[in-house]
Length: 66
Image (cartoon, rainbow, N blue to C red):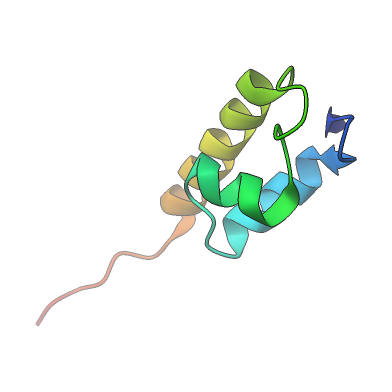
């Protein structure tokens, strides 16, 4: 699904960016151009990024210190 129509950024693009280490909205904007034109998509883009980052954190293995 397209999140940012102005720059053709999809929810998949945002999830891939999160998987590649993008965890802050400003970094997402710099990487994809999302929400740097009209800004109408900012709320949805932020929510999509936050959800993707949260899912990544939940699936990361916990390090065990011996």
